[in-house]
Amino acid sequence: MTLKSEALAVMTRAYAPYSRFQVGAAIRGASGAVYRGCNVENVAYPEGTCAEAGAIAAMVAAGETRLTEVYVTASGPAPVPPCGGCRQKLAEFGAGDVVVTMGCAGDAELRMTLSELLPGAFTAQHMGD
Ligand code: THU
Image (cartoon, rainbow, N blue to C red; front, side, top):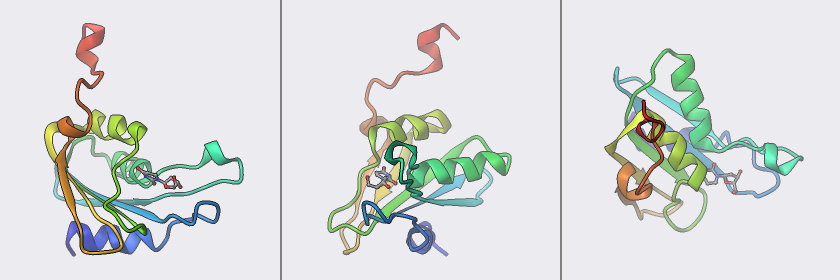
């Protein structure tokens, strides 16, 4: 399966009764394995989690902490950009040149690197590490 088909498959599992906006994320770990996540909403709205966060959690739980490729897709008409928080979460585990492909219900796709999505990212270097 391609990263795109993995993201589309997991998108159908989204729990999104409040926004009705389904999101699926597939990330490739450095080992080559693929990890998937969907958005999981909650009646207490701020407790909901994004698809990217779910995929990252699956990757870390499997013992990997580096990602090399990301595909995010959603049920809307235009390629879905990761939210600000997810850009920071992805940047924790991926280099600046990692490509994030954004898909949607149609055929349109948008590709950007993590550096383009999060210029001037806050990193461990800023803490003097
Ligand atoms: N959502 C994601 O899963 N990822 C993003 O990067 C953008 C937003 C979800 C959260 C919420 O369940 C729904 O989309 C509407 O904001």
